[in-house]
Length: 125
Image 1 (tube, rainbow, N blue to C red):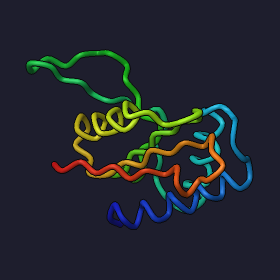
Image 2 (cartoon, rainbow, N blue to C red; image 1 turned 180 degrees about the vertical axis):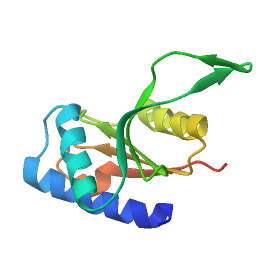
Image 3 (cartoon, one colour; image 1 turned 90 degrees about the horizontal axis):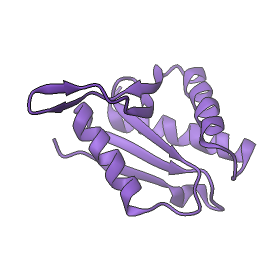
Image 4 (cartoon, rainbow, N blue to C red; image 1 turned 60 degrees about the vertical axis):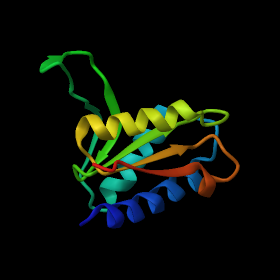
């Protein structure tokens, strides 16, 4: 399954979670519910997956973690904020670069319109 196929399934799971829970909850609630939905759909997920950071050929043990990694290919970064800031987009792009992944989805569950709150971010390896 390629990144686009996985992304399609993720979007469906996001809609299910949003339509069931609505906006305004903690990010950890959405992470747990979305992880459950994705697992139910047969996808392999890792939550709070560690992100390796290497600087000048030295591995730094810093404890950065991404919210959800799907099928070892797509990163999901979950927010529940009033509005996404440019730094949220940059954060996900940095995660993609550090992990050598091609595609990430940034989703803000604290919204009236979930469709416009799912942002695809690609890493042009």
